[in-house]
Image (cartoon, rainbow, N blue to C red):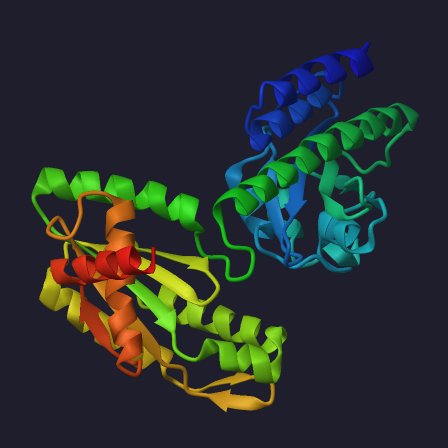
Length: 349
């Protein structure tokens, strides 16, 4: 009956796309209904091997803080040890177990005397976290506990695998896979909201289009791996110079675009100077030590466009004269540039 109820409730919560922590909290509460002798918890394992508490509805918050951020290892309690080894860990006496020496005090003060932690594994065999039962007396789990935990491990793995897939899909949909910066879709969404806010407040927004000078030479002479290394480093430098309200994205290849609210033309010029100086600091790529340079085109809201597509296009147009003049320059958009480009396109047509 417990098996059926757990599956019905948890699978229903997953189908309804309830938050992961709510699903895992539901698992813990259902288990505790039939096990008054124990309390349950779920701890996640992040990509860097650190423990992250996810659900422990019957335990005080300060217990979660004891292990939050700890790196999984053989001496990090039952959960840290189970996550590290990928095997269940029984601690029938927390007070005397050497794995608990650095963590036992707050648990013993609460009256917890034993713990049994089992690793939660995804469909690929990777350890995603642990499911633990804490006991109020010195004891080991019995057969009933084993059967219940087997069900819980399956359901927790299903929920956590689904969450990983959701996060991965979101990452692929809205972020550049090479640099981790927002892609064009997310950039457009954020900047459109930025422009609406600026229009309501009658303030300006600067949009900078940055193209790395002579980037093709790096790819041609050092290979695309070196080029990718250079792009990742430059993306990190750009992101490090911006405020929380600013948005930076990689559009394609060696092209980056930034939007900064509450900036006038003078502020934008100062920012471009600062960014160019930051980008030009030496970076190792392949067998070369490079001092990258960039050409920057700038368009201002609202004078150069009222929507993100117009601003990006006009900043891109302004970037070309900067590059044609030898690079490492900043050029602001003007109406004459657009007219000249349209004439050139008409002649080519």
